[in-house]
Image: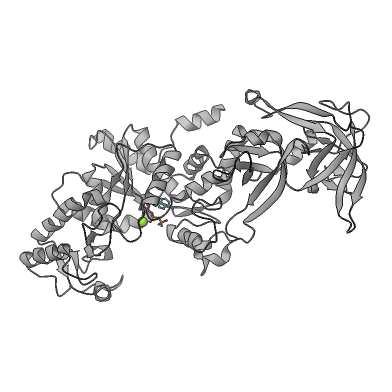
Length: 562
Ligand code: ATP
Ligand code: MG
């Protein structure tokens, strides 16, 4: 690790949230910090959630506090335990530990219900029989105040009786709801008698059929925070207008703790989508192969693509914590990934589009073992064995019959260096009946292993593999999922899917050492990019590599050095 990186990981850049926390600690308002990450288990986590995770868990870590993982599971219809399991795994993989057991909003259903009755008893909640449609009309608009519900002034006894019957299952879904009695003329629409409980005769993943009424998000969230003793409830900006309601609930029920809600701006990333609903659509409509498809901006998709958790955390820290709405370029994320892999990924050679090369002056049965460094700058990573033999493969793109000086690869009649091996010169091209090049006949210069040739200069350096000491592999070249920077703003975001976001190469050839690659190992395939052995499909018998990210355009420099 270089000095600057080291410095980066110890000095935590301050931000407005830390400033608030520092003040609260200095004033003695708090002596310990407790945050929480509260996902709804209705899909996989994406890069935006990674930001929220890094902020919540990161702050807890830095202040030697605690961070809870709480499933905000108040909506029985859309939630699945498979999602909950995937979310917990993602948080761990990102490198964070939650305090104690995983929490669930559903664990508080009894308490929440008790608080609802308390609000009724205080004359601060009522059962309303307006339909959803009517409620909407009564609510008013941004410019027009709302109208009181005709059910607003029921007696405490009637309200309690009705709520209990709602809870007992006596009424149909949607026929009535419990509402907070706040202010129908508030300039903040969230304060116009929001719904607290709705009837939903649905099975819940944790509470089964115990409940047929479910608390709303706004009612549940703040109270769950308070029950858990959260000090700072960090969320995204869209909840800013809900803060007065968050505070109103906590001010009007019998609970000691009153967490402070603080909002920060969401992370949006160009050329992709950060909405679970839309990501779900990509999955359901088979645009991608599941939530963990390497093209998905989900944590599990990025993991399968070969992004490390360190790279994702580095990217998140570079995006900062502010209240400014912003969209970050994909290249920022890719740069974090490249920087991490440049240092950590061992080198290997893979030929994506093989072209046969026969070395005419090399003995038929000879095979030479060469020790090639795993990393050019890091000797500690050791070497791997590569094999030189009479028949080799180079990439089709690395040969031209004729070319100008700028083409630093193999040309008929010219010389090129094979990476980690000899310099070869192309003497002859073999073509099929259609004129396609099927083979090259070359000569090798036996005095060029680790030495410059005498009297001539190779045009550049290309990668290669031996025919007998290489394996066939499937290689998937991934590109950006969307053609446009902001697909979410399209009328039909699916129409902006990049048709070339995946290209599958079935018969690539990779060096023999790669049979030892384990799922999730990442390599730099020299000159081609970073590739990750597929987490689920790769094995020693069936090599499958996903392109993590392309290389920077720096190969030209390396070529010049020879
Ligand atoms: P989506 O819109 O994708 O469904 P959500 O906000 O509904 O996201 P939740 O499961 O409710 O998803 O989110 C859990 C936490 O992650 C919330 O605190 C939310 O504010 C935060 N979060 C979600 N998306 C982002 C994002 N793009 N940037 C930062 N934080 C986010
Ligand atoms: Mg949500």
